[in-house]
Length: 256
Length: 195
Image 1: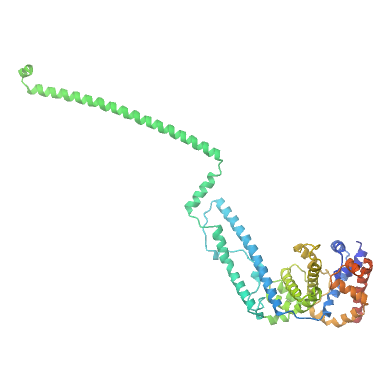
Image 2: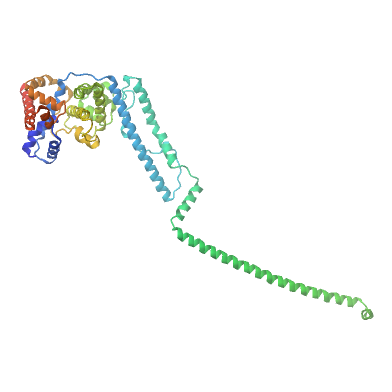
């Protein structure tokens, strides 16, 4: 499309009756042509916008205003839900990160936590009685706005619930056990198995050696004890014989 | 700042406050513009309930797109009128075509076909100024031929394109293009000479 052709279609563009192919080419020209007649286009856009001033002006029903407020509320709710989902995912990601770093998670009061902005648009909507609430238009919207106000307070509770679900308080011991397990699980399974087998064999060997040593000592001591007992008996007999001989007359000894 | 204070603000000041998430400003914008936008939408969709629904959608769009439009030229009026017209024409076309053959309505479609792209160089215009030239404009329009007026109505209120008008009137597309060009050029000329 040449610059001349674009000039031919300026009015149609302002009126909004270009065919799709023409519109695509015209839009391309608007972006690329340095000499595009912007002022002419502006004039025709304003001219066309005068057309509705000639209509019989009607005021819409008051309910339409409430409908706008409700749609904005639903929009805010949708944003909130999307952002709450993001917060939930972030919480899980952060929890996982913390666990990997080995810190103990202490659940603090959520109210004090710095929460990300939830439902940015709605959060900034003035929901007071003279705001977008359009409260003069009926109790129905007032109820809606009361709900909205509750929803505005709700995120903290909701966040708390999310936090509780995703980061339950764990006893330190349990967490440390988990930590140990996580470290153990870092080693390959085959390596830990062979290591435990070697340990078992060494333990059995050591146990057998210790048992043999005990048996050896036992028998060694037993034989020494037996030997000493025999010596004691012999000495006792020798002593007894000497006493008898000393107290008995010689002839009696020979006679007996 | 109570609601009455907003009534003294200009359209561009109101729109600026809407951009700062000021819902009272949006309410004032609604109070100010809903009659003309509703009348335009109803003329296009030809159904009261549908028109009310589209009007609500338009103000939701205003809220959603409040920061994506450049109002440096202070032309809130043309932006809002064009937005309402585009949205209503889209609804009408979808009804007529039973959504078959129509592209899906998604963010990209909305940004391209519904959100107005005003000229980088456009004169400031607000509702009061537009209403103040109503009589002159009516006179300028009445000076067009019936054929020229009919083509304008088909294009603007019925959302017909060049080829659709040609088909409906059983005339060549080139003739339609010529009539559209001539009718708006004459309208502009008549308005300037009448002021």
